[in-house]
Image 1: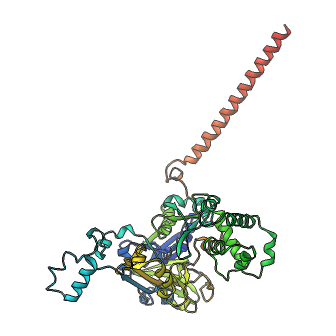
Image 2: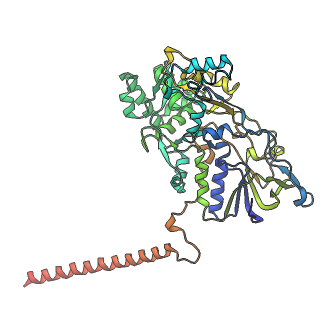
Length: 506
């Protein structure tokens, strides 16, 4: 960094994931001196979004992070720990192109002599049958790179969820743009079908019979009313509850897998809560209960960082962030380049933590919001085989399926069930990474901790008059004027009434 940072802060935050960004916004809003720093050159950490070109060049460094820094700046008996660990990085990352690098239709003949004949003939035979404008190559797809927002952890927001309420109450919602999901689909009878979400969807769905429509509406109404019969299913699964309701297999599929997003083993009370969560968010912003950030989930951490532009706060990307100084079991300082920065407390993403602190934590989260069983490729093979075909494959019966141009598989660790206080220094706080929930609600735990951001007209710069004082004075003056006007009207009416009575007496 070209400019020197202040040497002392109340709080140092390492990593720009979602939780770190929310805590950074909350701390700065209450007047804390915050240094927010990251060794990566992009926002979001493990919650980030990338263009197609950026995710292809994403550095997958599985080492311990930065090397141990210079002890020149340490004080007696302090120990330096390097930033980063091997336990919570992206794993099993594989990106695969399913299309040729360039369009060889026009070049096959001219380059025939300089290339192996077999390769040229294969490429030419593969592509010559397709219209020139329909042939996709790596080159022209990368030219459209910025039209893609590829999330490391795709997320949606329930319209009445805790996270959306936080966005509204804190005024963060104005820093990003959202759209409503137009429909919810599920895989049923070997095809994608629209899930009937609202009352109107239920009655217009041709896949659901009249009897099934009545049964479904009766079920959803009973769940909203909190029926007493649920007490009999405390130790039973949600699927058992639905079967006891005599629902058809189609309705059970809709409710269990699409609306509740549960499994065959989900407890009944949890399945009911999931269903209520879905139903409560219907009708607020659109036909479905879901919103999504238009420019990728990685845009949301940036939105929280926008709140601090007029507050005592520093943000920087620094690859020279060397490590942490600890005195026994207590964090003391951060080494950035050749500058020692002291702070009372440290918050960091779990992937930025020194390995000594997190070496006993488990890891088991995989992309596409699915718990990992074998490998990402194997876990999603049945989904890919049913919904897509490779670009080079030709099957007359499956010609309507989307073709895969590029695919990427990787695993992310699930740290949300770890004890993040065990073996952690008293003034150091670890932020868990993404979880497998569809929304961000589990990340904010329903706590009111982020004050509302001021509107531009409410911001006071030193030396200027406080507009709120003028507004308050004007309001008081207006109230006084209103009181005078009301009294004047009352006196006029009283005077007119007295005159009318005098005239009648006369």
